[in-house]
Length: 401
Image (cartoon, rainbow, N blue to C red; front, side, top):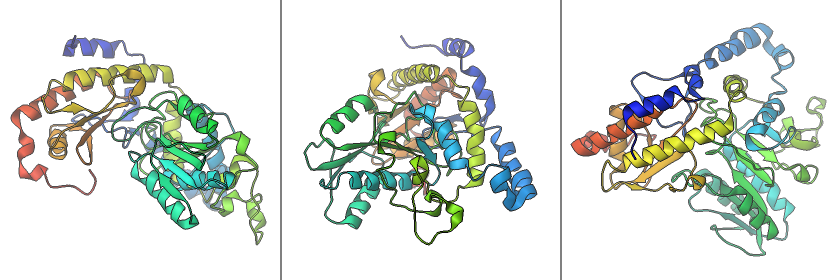
């Protein structure tokens, strides 16, 4: 039975996560359903970044590397991210970008399986994962990329996303990891679209990568992270041997000597101001109950699917209906998906579009309300009824869709 708007407001009043909404900057005239692309800004982020600029950089200058803890940021932040992906301290390093982390993980995995020459990656992966795999295979020569699912004793590594970026489908991390490793291959998980959306556990995987600017709200371009299973510490090697991964960076030795443990997978100087914004976001996440986040996520996405399907007969849900197989987004297919998304944005509902025909809506439980979901579905119904998306101005593609 479809909920009424009053019933949605009652759910908001009883929501155990309701208090977190006040900690984020959200425009009054917009329902923000793109947190799976870029999370909303914590209100504390501006002051935290200002402190880094004015007191730390401005007051300490180069001394800030010691007095403000800048030098330790990659490992310290990695330890704070670790509980969100089900692993322990000393197993995650933060910094650089997801693309760099994917390169590191794949390169290390291939060196650990020198007799195997196949990398498996799904065609439905976020393109940078597949592109990095293709580039690395070309660089090393003699390697090939095959599509998931593929099994064979020539597979060195499998790279998959826990949540498929376009459809929101969630894969079974434990089952897939066990199957891949039983075949003698190594498992790399991309958790960009799952960390912060629900409890994640990649502890059995060999490597995992993720970003912090989506559900974790670290800000545009905030640091990515890399998990290396402790069983590979000491044997896995970082192909990007930047100075930060040296055993003694300030010894300035002429040749590279790797640091032990996860520090060996650091690369370069951390982006201090980005770490400051992420620090503000992590202070929120350290108080959030991930089980409650997941429960609300499923309730929000289920409600939206139910309401939105009434909007138009040509709107086809691309996201699994089964809760366990769903991330924290809902995607629909429609032949005019792009102008529909543009027309929705004008009406105050911010989603995004993914080619060729995906209307994508992300649900960030810390700041999204049930009444927002109701109102967004109502706006979607109105857009299909009035068809403003047929206006030519909505068909012109912006640089970022």
